[in-house]
Image 1: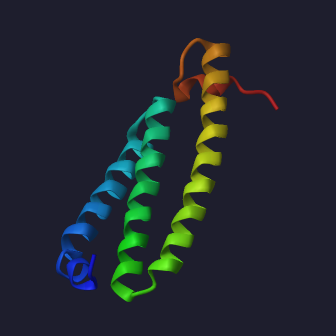
Image 2: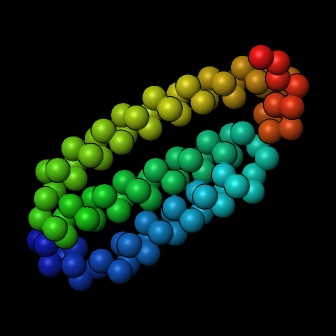
Length: 107
């Protein structure tokens, strides 16, 4: 797509990225369910990914933005895989995936 498409739709795409980020942040802050918190983190990173792609397309440095996006996706997958493993372990030990189940942790 041409750079004019990205410039014409900049406000819409930036608002979409902001909405994704805000919804993810709300889920992380308000939710007490660990699975919902993971989904919120996923939404946060998708908003950042969209904004990175938009910035790369508008500035004409799409290749650099794509490299950042791929790096972000790889880091996101690793972090979510580790966090999902922790959630499964917590659920197996406590029988629930709530933040309140983490009060009994021992070091």
